[in-house]
Amino acid sequence: MSLTRAQGILEYDGARQISSGLGGVLTGLPAPGGSVGHGGTLFSVDNAPVVLLHGNLPVWREFAADMTDGPDVEQLEKALEALGYFPYSPNQTYDWNTIVAVKAWQKALGLKQTGTIELGRIQFSAGDVRISKLLLNIGDQVGAGAGVMTVTSADKIVKAELDVADRSSVSVGGAVNVTLPDKTVLTGKIKEIGQPVEVEKPTGKKVIVPILVSVDDVTATKELAGVAVSVTIEQVSRKDVLSVPVSALMAIAEDKYGVQVVSDGSLRLVEVQTGVFVGGFVEILGGEIKAGDRIVVAG
Image (tube, one colour):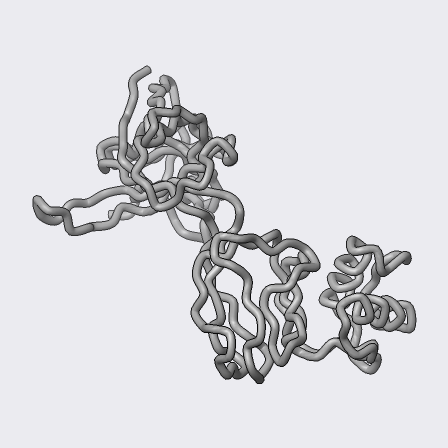
């Protein structure tokens, strides 16, 4: 086993922009560096809160009694359930139970108790958000679609670069050590490996492989963000692996590959799971293919 070292940057993950879905005057903003959780206020327009709720679907329509059934309704009911306003089994129908729960939630927030949630009053996020930068000031006029702030998740990620020669000896899920500026060493894993890309360096153009590394103990990074860190990756050599020429791979769907196997004079397309790439060959981790099979290689 050998080690590969790379330089990286420790950053908050999931950076994105939050825009207003309402028009009016911006009357409230959170402090940069703070966080907003489930049921919390992202910002206020005309002295009324825009609320963050947990959920994966974005809001694309008003929530009202005459709306059609949909997964967004169920997501809303689950969010209200988590806040203690919906004591029923969430479903996809905006019925009287939903209206009663929405009115109770509106009363707690000091909103008019209509039982209807206008488009822009709530925003869904998969988890809590951290405020990284404010794009507007209190008193600014906002319109639907105006960017108000940029946010991230509470998780942190390390963006690092590998030499192309080291790509063959690392894989997603591989163990790493991340050394912080104060020499603290944290454990982590390779979360994602990108495609080789040419970048401009002080010494000229260079082809690198970008990787993302997750840190096991985010709390140990304290408030560090945007700082340079060192990444050490364990390289493990493997023997007796099944591999095929890279030119034998066929893209059959997004992130899915296949190989044409010659069987009894006919061709059979077999989906395969790929591993590491090295020397024009790719490791095959899964699929109905075995050593000795004849395959088609693009010429």
